[in-house]
Length: 258
Ligand SMILES: [Zn+2]
Image 1 (cartoon, helix red, strand yellow):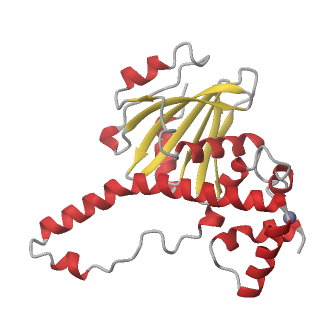
Image 2 (image 1 turned 90 degrees about the horizontal axis):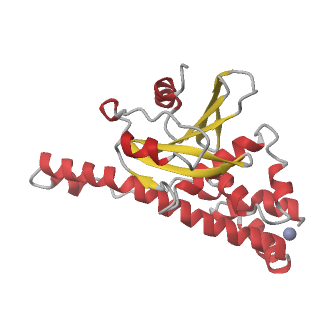
């Protein structure tokens, strides 16, 4: 087995989806190849971190649904009949977090081999996606946590060289969560964080004064949706696993019409 074959199958291997003979070949290769073993460890680590982060955001809605169900059904029959299906049983984590793996191996020699397989993604898109995935790890979502735009917008003063729009959209079902500064394309950028149900939406802002306007464009990578636009020298990128229709509605409200 070559390293390329091993890396190709690593996601399915982590998900336990490979036939026994292929599993044995990969186990054998991981015992003898330090690079692939390192990639495997990082994939497993990142997978559990991302799962933990998503569990955290999923939990409140699951809890609310259970409470609603028990209120609507005092005898508890609904709860009793409800199939106990684990939330994440059918999700292929190894593959779902392939984007996270790109982040995880960024410091290793494997980076080139893996990023080379995604020629359609620009380096900026990779960085924005990586930032989004990293933000889902507990404790990484916001530097300033507030649902009040009068706390969040001034917080960026002196931290980044522009002032992002921070509209209040609670009444439309997109509560503000806060903001943070992240590092994209060689500079500090403002990130304004919203949620929609259990989905996190990161909105990245940074100036690029001499660049031409770009109409909003949507792309999808590994279940994450990205909308980017540039208007009057300001880049705005949105990332979320929210469905594209709701994300595009949201984009129309936050992207600058200036
Ligand atoms: Zn190898």
